[in-house]
Length: 391
Length: 242
Image (cartoon, rainbow over all chains, first blue to last red):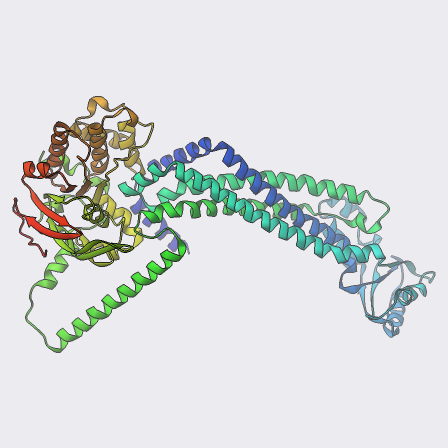
């Protein structure tokens, strides 16, 4: 890998011996383009920002919902919390009785250490809180999944038996609100993701339109660059950089919005004492951080790819290739088949010569000389070659 | 650095077109065109509008691809050249298009510097090069003039200066005297002749018979996309297939 990177770097150094000057030119072109297209650039940044912030918010809110409903996932309808100091006999007798109940499909035990791990993950942003609680303070529990055709009365009857039993701290049921949250959370998450995707496509198209407008405004410059022998990347780079900057700025704004929105939603819901499940609505800081990184990456990719695509038509037009993708593909297929026909013809001629060797006509030598004579590798050192040599 | 212009002094054609055909939809722009241009030669492509002169020049810079036949530049069949090699070709074969494009709002000097900077020339060296080139085309005094302030002749010379600034082996000029008065035309042709005498192969397309007659160089005449005749004035030894 390292060798490959070194080879790539050296190849680039050979091809672009004065990268510093070219880089200066690229930065200058990018700046001029950004400066000359302020309204379009701002529109692109805003659109990318809105799309990315929606996507980011949907991701962080989903994470909060996951946290809030974690213990109710997998069809759990009843949780029997045991006193922290409940002895092993009580715990196992509850478990045995639940397992033998015909209304129970499955039952799982969450120990104090497992409960502490869940708690630690949920409040990863508040290490002081996690440290101050300790595993001993949290109750162990049995999580009960009833049979699929159990009615709500039957489900309640499973826990009723334990309401007042010794060693039991509390019996909790998945109320309608929890069921509703579980039901709609994935729908909301999908809807937000779909909306974010649509807006992402819109942002990409807007960035594309912006890059096209910028490329059109600088078409003379593009033509001249290609005419004098600037490489494809040299022509594209200022535009790609411009798109990447717009995308990154959009993502930066979007990240700020996601951070603020996530915190506001969390504070609002966690402070709602009426709905107990929402008190565990926690969006971990790590999650927000990873969403922000993802947004930045997507922003840069959105902007850079849109610009890369937009300038392509100007680059291709100067290479004898059609600008439309369909015509280009047809042309390429045609070129490949032409090459194949030529190669076959050469093989046929060569095998014919092998079969009946002829005296050399010197043709091969002449062709070889043509190829060896002038290399197209032509650097600027030949420079003044010079126009003044014979002038 | 790779490559020099030393090889320009060697014998043999630097440009060879062999049975090249090109169509634009139903219109046949070129049919079975074959000719060769020697290294360091100044030659003319003549013919009426629509005879295929510009198409030939665009084929030589790989702005277009032939439908059939081979186009050799500096020993390479450029119609089968990889796209990534096209920039190298254009550093070898510079093109002066018919519409004389210059960057708007920028001076002659800036236009030439721009071309050199995108090719990665260091600033000091590019600056020295600009001096030489401006002197060659006689625009030293007008170096700060913006492209909009230039006359037709000055504009033409500025475009030629930019094209040859990076020392290409071949210069392809498309109607460089198209809209110029006779005196300016002579000036431009003198510059092209000087460039040719310096070792650069120059191929000029024109429909102006007077220019061609005055220069007494080899002429490739085109008619309806075919080579109608090749008039030998110089010492062309590569032969013609036409």
